[in-house]
Length: 252
Image 1 (cartoon, rainbow, N blue to C red):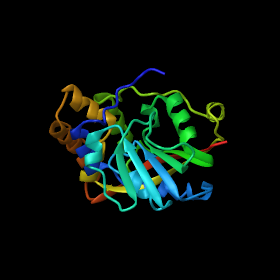
Image 2: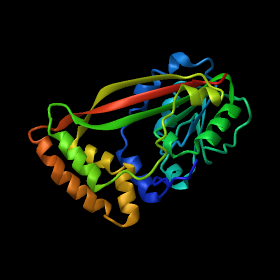
Image 3: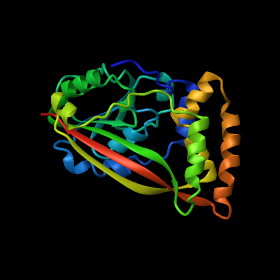
């Protein structure tokens, strides 16, 4: 699988991520709980600023959290049962067959998939669970049908950088030694205009624009505020519609 550039490694990306990512993780992980056989040790891979790691700590006694970016780990939220360390997803400093669960939030598409799945299988106990999950920006705002037009303009102005887009399903999971279960659903998330702008500034789209020198964060924020102001007229918050996905892979 070809290598893709991950735009989340810089200090600027980490600061924006810490400031703007909503904590949707408990909502998704509540659906993971019934699939767990053991709850002693978990790992959170590509942990970023620790939102996913702290959420996993609500399900297991101890969490080992890893990210390839030192800048992200500087911003990671402290927790008495979470230990952070720098490591790539494909080479984790973990003993073989010790994990009850491993989670990956919004990052699987940046990995060398085959190498990571092999590493996950190595570190999980038999019957241990690898959970891949995401919460998608769908470009929908409740009660604002014109918001979709803004979303298209936004995506055209700040294109999505390359990532691994190959479909992942049961055949590939079983070939890697896992069973396969997937759930998808939608949910509302109430955001103020400033929160929505801060969130959009954490997208790989806007991070790539900043990294390339096409625009500064302040320039992007100013454009977003101008575009979003009409949608927030007369309202402090608006309900954004997000699409959640949880893929549960059990080590066979």
